[in-house]
Image 1: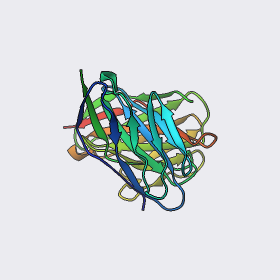
Image 2 (image 1 turned 90 degrees about the horizontal axis):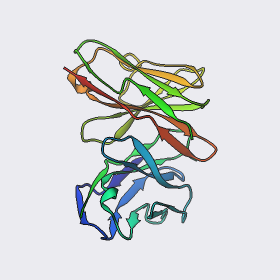
Image 3 (image 1 turned 180 degrees about the vertical axis):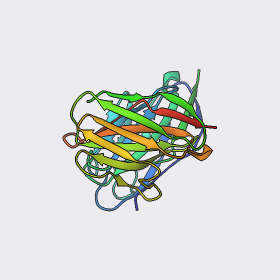
Image 4 (image 1 turned 120 degrees about the horizontal axis):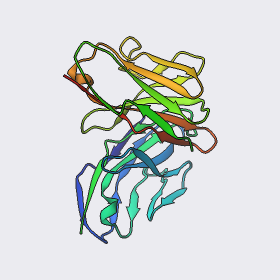
Length: 114
Length: 114
């Protein structure tokens, strides 16, 4: 079956530091990959997505590239802010996306200190 | 993307009772999904609910425990039956979009069983 493995937190960084949150996956076929963010007290929000190999998703300064050869979709940001403190979830679906439910990783709690 | 209204936002229930969670979408959608997020854990797909057909349950979830209704293209309910403290979780509904491979999530129902 499908699975998503992501680094577990909490991850604590200083403001303006470089961020990487690792995500690797196991799936049949050619999955679509997603990063979701959950800010304190709020619901899940889509951060970015990629639907085929070598696609790069980007949003709000965050980027992730779909690497089929390493089955990875690592999340990066060049300079984090306190407002980026949240829980980040890597997820996949092995349909084109939208037709089947998502398989989530365990989430990474990110804490940015001023 | 659609706006999802999920009710109740939270509830405290006695063991042995049942709770029905409602999910209302502001536009017609084909695919609806129900997830559970246990304390400190990731999201796990419970079932997929399509209008006009029986819900499809994931391994470990059964209809007697989590009956789902999907009477039309904008509404669904999930019932948590004969509750025990182990059912204390956040329950979320989600809709999927085949056109852009995306998903939107409701704000969740925080359930505590005492």
